[in-house]
Structures are given as structure tokens and as C-alpha cells.
Length: 268
Image (tube, rainbow, N blue to C red; front, top):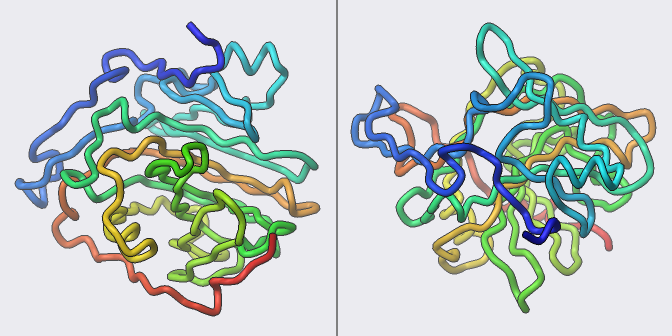
């Protein structure tokens, strides 16, 4: 096996994910494609079923140890019997690390499951971070979807963030090949320390931004909390319950979405 190839280490969910009907009691017609709730990961260790990426390098836990890649700020924690992923990042020059699951291995068809859902809890934000600009491009919490690729190496990505400074609903873009559109779902210090459930129609977001239907099978879901560009900054967040839904949960408010042109700015 090529050690540089992304691998998924989970047990029964390695190649197949459970599709559970009626998992959400509010809506019996909803179908759920479960990616991970971290219940199979070991507390205090890097989560099973996930890989890591730093710049153009990627791999598993063994490769991180061999190459001295600091992925051990990404650890499974547990509270009251519930496990989740905890990330803490502090200012340090160099590339940030993100962790990922290969969504295509779970058989995710975005037409059937257009809603991506997760929970996050942000506890520290790097002050002054702003996703529009390279020099301040840090996010207390982020979840990215790679829909596919162009040419064929450039990823097509939409990134959902909790931003230190940009308002909820803003869409930021830094010009440059392969850089993602960034949609702000949380902002500043409001609701810090609170678990918040996100349900986002990633099919509609793609159509709104790119003007056409997305590829049917998204490739990867990335997670990152980073403060490596903000001197003195700290980013800290928890993540849990990653899944795709066939429809919004009953009563779940649809997130506001608006292309705010004043935020469609940036530099290379």
C-alpha cells in the first residue's frame, strides 16, 4: 500500500456508512448518512477513521510520527460519556494542519443527501483574524467540502467557518488558484462555549456560488481550527456528529445565505 495515500481506519464504517431511517424523531421521512460521531475513537488519541494534511503532505498517524508532523493537537476527548474531536492551535509560523475523512468512501451522493450536518463548540478565537486576507487567514473553527477537482489537481472547495471578525452570512474569497469560497456561520465571541448544531444545504450553496449543479459525489470533508497567522492568537474548538441528511430536520431554521459583495474581496 502507498503510505502516502489517504486511508480510512474506521472499523465497519471503513467502506460503508449506516443509512438510518427515522434517526431524527422530529421527521420520520429524513434519512441519515453517518460519517462519524467519534464513538469508535480512543479518548486522548488522534481520531480513528481520519487522515491529516499539511500543505501538500498527508497521511495517517504512523506517517505523522515518522515525519514529525504535529497532529496530536487533534485529539478525541470525552464528556459525560460523549466523545468528540478537540482541536487547539496557537500562533506559530508555518502551514496549518487539517484533518479529513474521504466522503466518497461512504457512498455520499449529494443529490440524495444535500444537507451536511455537524456540531461544533468554539472556546477561543484568534483576535483580528480575517479570512479575506492571506496574512490573517485564520479561523477558530472550519469545515470544508471538496466537491471535485479542476485540471485535474485544483480542488473545488466551499469552506464553512466560525470567523473572528466577519459577520454571519458573509462570503469571503481570496483570489488565487484552488482557494475556497468561505461562508461564515458563526462570528466573534457570541455563543462561545456552546454546542451549536449546523445543518447546511451544501448542494444549494454550490449552485449559488458556481451557478451550476455540483458533482454528485463530494470527495473529502476537512476540519481545521488554526491560529498560525495571528501573533499571540489561539484557536480552540470541539467537533462532533458529522452526517449527511436527505432533508432538514423538522423545525430546523434554514441558515441565512446572502452573497455579500463587500466581502468578496481579498489579496493573493
